[in-house]
Image 1 (cartoon, helix red, strand yellow):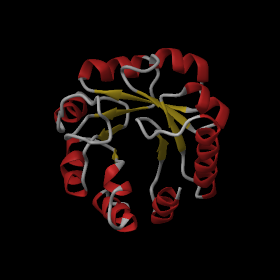
Image 2: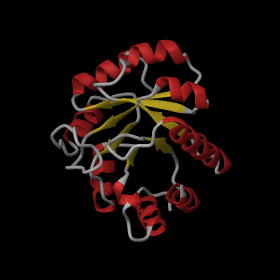
Image 3: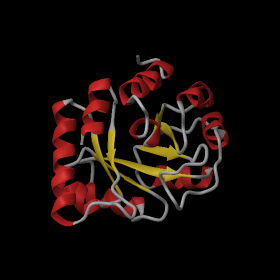
Image 4: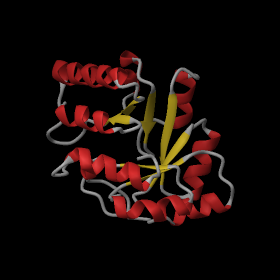
Length: 191
């Protein structure tokens, strides 16, 4: 929880709850932590998203939910949430991005940009090629680059057409998470 608090204090603009993997919390411990994280985000007026758990997103009254290509279909999620929360969808190709748009997504997460250690089943890295293709085609949704992103990547990502970046390890495993957040914000022109 302390890393979340530090990141919020440093100025992150959105937080996505992603509790997966062999060390993931379960049961009441998971629920209590999720509620606490959501409340912390509200205290800082930062949108709180849940990754791939529609029931939890609804229970927590999250601001949004993000689903991947292997998760519940975006169209079904949109039908269940209506316009009560934002819907983000992962896309690894222009076809997946177009489907996400058709299914009611509010934004897409495009990647992985580079190899990532945060997701064991990640697709092959795609760099900024898909972002660039979608931007050239005037794709109407905001695009966020995901997967292995570092501050040094941000200028290329933004020049390709992305609105922002989503990171885990670059902040959570940083020696100085505050400095890491500030560096990203500066590179994004928000710091």
